[in-house]
Image (cartoon, rainbow, N blue to C red; front, side):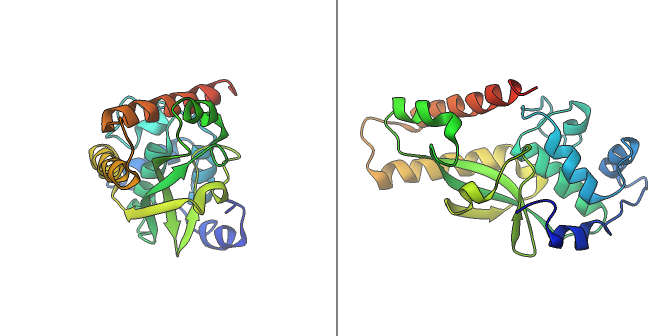
Length: 206
């Protein structure tokens, strides 16, 4: 779904940020000259894809000028909530990460003889529609059909809760798929290699 869809234009060009002492994340955007959700989404999408150091602080995406799917969407959910737009939902999805929807990890999956790896991904859901602002030219349609699990979470859940849920899912997948001679720690190591490859691929663009 494009950020320039008719739905977004009609809804979020009217979604103006309201300043106030109880809206610290909103103030960070206002300080950047950003006054509505539409512009905020585009601004966040353009930030480099890298992990922030202060994972529990949504505002760190703006102060550190980078973020991942988790931190970027937690930030956008937070600013939406500060402005009483609870229809903006933060989602945690597990999808089949494969060489088609994520070609950057093709060689890693091939090396470890995996057709796909269940990967956790955060995005927004608004009135039943999925919106993703992870990075420029990222097309949510490439993997939306591969989502095999979905759960709504809060911004404060993007670190420990997300990791625990993801690992529990991988444990279940190992047993269900009857994978031999592979443990959770092995899969998590492979997953980290994939994430680092995605980060390195994005860094090369800047």
